[in-house]
Amino acid sequence: MLSKKSKYALKALMVLAKEYGQGPVLISDVAQREGIPRKFLELILLELKNQGILQSKKGKGGGYFLGREPRLISVGHIIRILDGPIAPLPCVSKTAYMRCRECRDERSCGIRIVMKEVRDATAKIMDSTSLADMLSRVEAVVTGKESLSFAI
Amino acid sequence: MLSKKSKYALKALMVLAKEYGQGPVLISDVAQREGIPRKFLELILLELKNQGILQSKKGKGGGYFLGREPRLISVGHIIRILDGPIAPLPCVSKTAYMRCRECRDERSCGIRIVMKEVRDATAKIMDSTSLADMLSRVEAVVTGKESLSFAI
DNA sequence: GAGCCTCTTGACTGGATCGGTCGCGACCTT
DNA sequence: AAGGTCGCGACCGATCCAGTCAAGAGGCTC
Image (cartoon, rainbow over all chains, first blue to last red):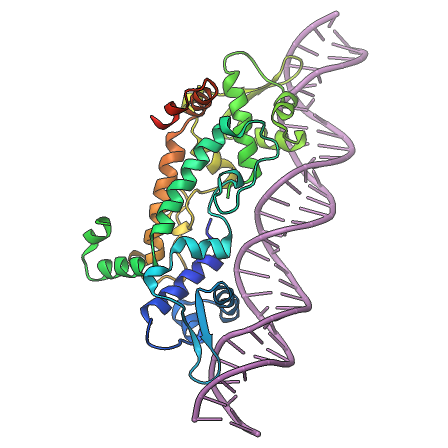
């Protein structure tokens, strides 16, 4: 299950992606536009800044903005930062592998085989979807061309 | 992330599936074979019984056994019983749908679009994999015919 | 029916995580 | 130097996770 942190982060990033190249956006603006508790959002944006996703500027005319183009920021990366590994089990994680204490033979663990499939399918979707992708999908729906969302 | 509950449940069910048709198996046996805390496993098996997955017999010669054939018990069903919905967000769940409080228009929510893909991919794998499937995959690995596990 | 075996049930725990909130800085711009 | 903005540490209540404990209820065998 996606935490609210990740969900809020993605919502906020979508706002910043839409505004990309047009200067900083206030935390308060983002919070209000997306209905996110302001103080909680501060925490989230700070973390994203520390991980290099965002940049910030203090003082008047300050705020947050994306550190790179929206097409270079993947959903998977954001979720890994805020929620940790995507894999349903540590023993199938690529970014945070840990073997199961009680498994004699990992290779012949049926659960692992299935969960590896799940991890791969999930990671494939999340890592190949960028903020820009999401924006254009939303755009496609809004302008009534829903069929585009299946063309990817 | 899969909880230990679900993981233990699947491990236990694999044992019971292997033993299917050969009478009840003791909780203690399952616990020992799979390295699961006994008391904790009791809880899990009881829940699975209450949900109709397992049956039990008390007294000497008693124990737990599957309520139906291993090929009729899906991984997805087990995980839903113990961990709740598979969907990463309530607003894309088929079995426990709930709309997002702060979403104005659900259809044009980019996050929802992506998470729906994730849900569908995950559910497809989990719901189409049965205990019998897992058993035969494990068998394939054990007998050295790993390539079979990709043929499905 | 005694005694043992096995599941059943409810209460309890310690620790972690989630989803926030508060207050005071630090820093930047004008 | 004033006011706007992010930065950061502390704190909080609720909930969930993983597991334990003690007692009991039902069934079997002798």
